[in-house]
Image 1 (tube, rainbow, N blue to C red):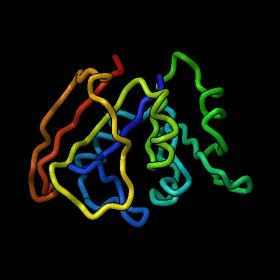
Image 2 (image 1 turned 90 degrees about the vertical axis):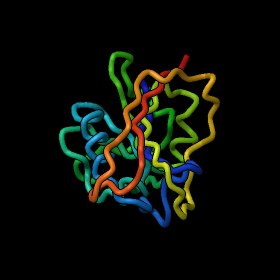
Image 3 (image 1 turned 180 degrees about the horizontal axis):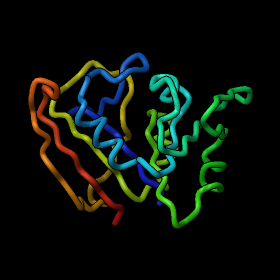
Image 4 (image 1 turned 60 degrees about the vertical axis):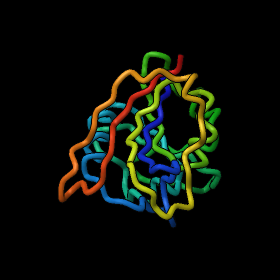
Length: 160
């Protein structure tokens, strides 16, 4: 199964200047809970923003730069390479960025979404999609507190 995980705001904003425009530790915990032991796929810019391979996961970095190499992660150069390497019995989770989401969206079967009920200054966005094509299978309101200072919801959708 190919899944995508994203945190976005009211306008589907996901980033600004190669960084997330918010700090939400609960979202990072949601990411960890749903990706440990799985294969994660991300674009080079997303990988560089994270700064290192995420532990306890197989890390795959998608880039057009043929010379790009990184210790602790596999490097591929096309969505086709990703799809050819994936086994049907595995869940792979795409972590972004926006260009990778656009390319992978037609193949995605599950969406892990953290919806943040705020509007941020963003220059990268998650693709628009038709909710009629997706079934909401789980939703939970996050707890707003001093560490997580926004209203937010965790949602999981599966393609109908």
